[in-house]
Image (tube, rainbow, N blue to C red; front, side, top):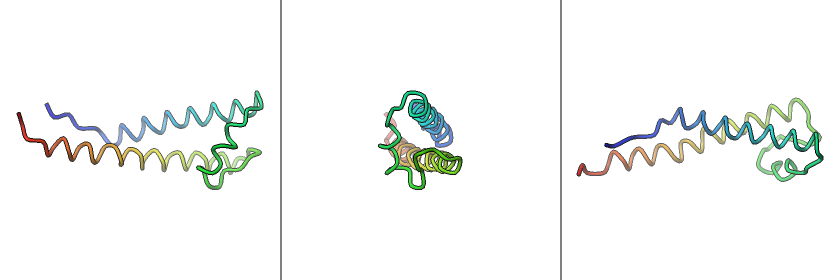
Length: 88
């Protein structure tokens, strides 16, 4: 059986996982004074701390872009290689 990965399902899964992590980091910074988002600012251009509505939305936008990009890096080569394998 040659099972392929669904690009759309993988992108949505990555988006949900990264969004939950992003929200937990924001909650931790706001409630407990953690400094996790200071480490994320170089990876999310346009995101700024202290938190603003625009910075929050830009962070979500970058998470969506990174999710789609990561899904493409995983799903497309995997599906290509699976389809290319000779049947046993």
